[in-house]
Image (tube, rainbow, N blue to C red; front, side, top):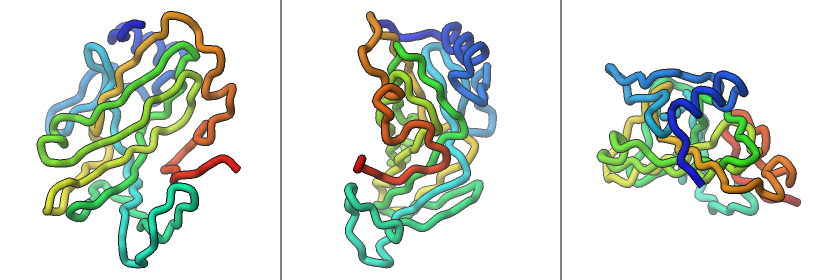
Amino acid sequence: MGLKSDKWIREKSLNEKMIDPFCEEQIGKDVISYGLSSYGYDIRVGNEFKIFTNVNSTVVDPKNFDEANVIDLTSDIAIIPPNSFALARTVEYFRMPDNVLAICLGKSTYARCGIIVNVTPFEPGFEGHITIEISNTTPLPAKIYANEGIAQVLFLEGDEPCEVTYADKKGKYQSQTGITLPRILR
């Protein structure tokens, strides 16, 4: 299994639209950086957010998620309340090769502010926008900038093809667009 380089990421993105839109260089002046890096790709957060609220005093249940738990916001800046949480999505749409798994890690600029980004792995064969989980671990409101960097994606190529891809098993988040709330297969 090998970590893939900027050359490989560029070729897959330009020729097979693995990342769309794709930024061939790392943009970092006056913004939280995004775009192609040496061994990864810094993704951007879109301008749509679902911010958790306790106004309705419902329970967060991953098997039966109540949309009253979140408020929708479309903005260039999102303020996440202290000790709270938001969902967002990437600007980029991904089409993962059948022999590649991607792992996503939060950017240090946000981490140094107590803002933690969690994204589950992008499985082989997955296609769609990535839903991003953003936690504000501080006792202060935290600002998130839309259309700027939020996390870095690392691409790992498998030693051999997997038997069943995410697309083959018709994964529950396949081809998602926008922010996708938790769901289970029924």
